[in-house]
Structure formats: C-alpha cells, structure tokens
Image (cartoon, rainbow, N blue to C red; front, side, top):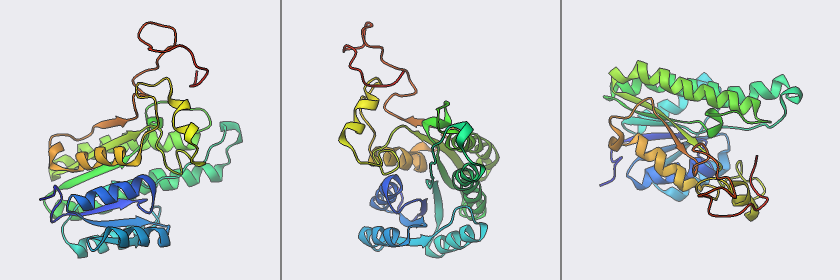
Length: 264
C-alpha cells in the first residue's frame, strides 16, 4: 500500500528535473499523477514512462483558463487531494539592468502561477474532505541574493502566500507548506551540467555538495502525506545546510583549511 493510493496529485513543472522526480515518487507511492507543464513533448514522454497512473496535461500556470482545464482533468481521474506548485523560471540580472518585462515574467510564472494554482484547487480539495498543497519556494525566499531580484521577490512571495493560505484553509482540512531547496542538480541549478559545479560552490555549507532532485522530492512527498498531518504553514529548507550557516576555514570545527572555493 502506498501513501497516496486512491488519490490524485497535480505536479506543475513536471516535464523534467525536480518536478519529474516529484511526479515519479508520487506515482511510486500509489498516486494517480497529473504532470502539468508547457514542455508538451517532454512531459508526455515522462508520463508515458511512468505508466498508466500518470497523465500529462498542458498548463500555462499564469492562465486562469489553463488552470481550470488541468484541475478538471485531475478531478475526472478520481479524488484530487494534492497540488504541488513546482513550476518556476529564473532570469538573472543586476537590479539596475533588469527589464520590467523580465521581472514581470518571473513574477507571472513563479508567484501568480502559485496563487492561481492554490485558488483553483480549493473547491475540489474541500469537497473531497481536505488535502495538501506544497509550494516550492527557494532558499532565495529566505534571504537576499545578488543578481536574483525577480526570482527572490517571487520566492519570498510564495513563502508568505503559503502561510496566509495555511491560516485560511486549515479549517477546511487543507494543509499548505513551502519547501525551500538550495542548489539542485537540474538544468536550472546546474545549466552546464558541470561536475565541478556540484561541489565547489557548496564547499562551505554543512553538506558540501549540490542537492539532487530526488532529495527534494522526498521532502515534498512527506509534506503532502498523512505523515505530516499536523504540519501546516511551515517552511522546510532542503539545502544541505546553506541557510544554517557557513563553515569558516581555519576556525575550530571547520574540518578543513581554506580551499579558495565557496563564496563570501
């Protein structure tokens, strides 16, 4: 028996990377999974590979009409109980150099997409006796970071919206939590798929390496499951210790001397 037997789960941004890992793990746990994305060929291929309990659906997360269609697809498959707002984009630029169009593009996908997803699933989750929403934020939703003004703004918004939604929806049996990944070895987190990039930038954090998609997926599935039945409005950093602090080479407890890697 899986933790999600008889339950339908929507995962956005599920055509590859972190979203794909989440969709696969939910399916392994017995869920009927709707993989939603704009990458139609890739998403359909992943759904086909997962098998009969996976369905691909095109979703523009910034569109109310597109969300209505995907939620209708999900409810036609069974009892919708979980939404994972995973879809996101990143456009890096210094504050002075970032165009309004690029800023708004990030906000539309990351922030507005999350808002629309939560709003659209309230009625079916409530009608089904409750459920869980897991919103993917970032460690950049817990701190500031240069060159990431749009991304940081959207991820802080997701963090706050998750808490507001948890407060509103708890009495309907709907739990809402946010997950805050650090660096993840995906096309977004490591676009050149460079082996050196999986270690050197993380040398001074508690676990000195980049994260993997399945490590984020396990945290997401936990928060969506009944194992987390008394957790709502929480923020879970899955970041190898980045937000916990920074090892200082040469000081007691560092375990190594300065290497020239890391960040200051």
